[in-house]
Length: 177
Image 1 (tube, helix red, strand yellow):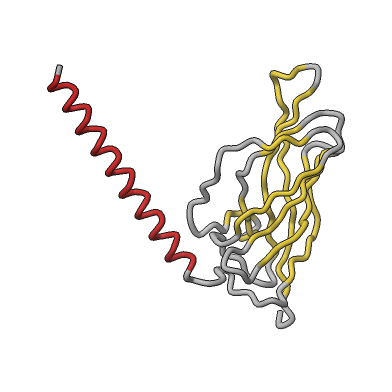
Image 2: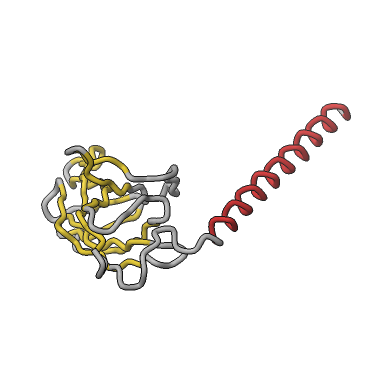
């Protein structure tokens, strides 16, 4: 019995040590990323121009609320609106795509890892959410689109939510371009 307790204790200590080591690597990489400055390379005069949006379900929409392109942590803030009679949810998953050779393709330069959280968007409500742009290759003068999906529960059948694909087309404009 003492031997089993000792083995469990050793395994627990090793697991904690491994977790601390992983945390140290993650924090070290985060500090290195923070020292880079703006990952987009845009100056303060760069602006995002919204070129249109799309939703599978009428009454659900997304639009650009705000953005910051030249900070250490560039972002785009998206306004989610629900003008339907049903409640909706959306997650934090998203992508930024660029049209290349007639196809929309992700312009992510790294894996995009987001928390698995569902945000409730009640009928008649709106929410805003900031999305990180630092892991995307974004240039001035090119059309991009922010893509995401949400889920709408039909009041008649709560067990079968409808998937709603959404996007906003936008471009980044600078005085030089």
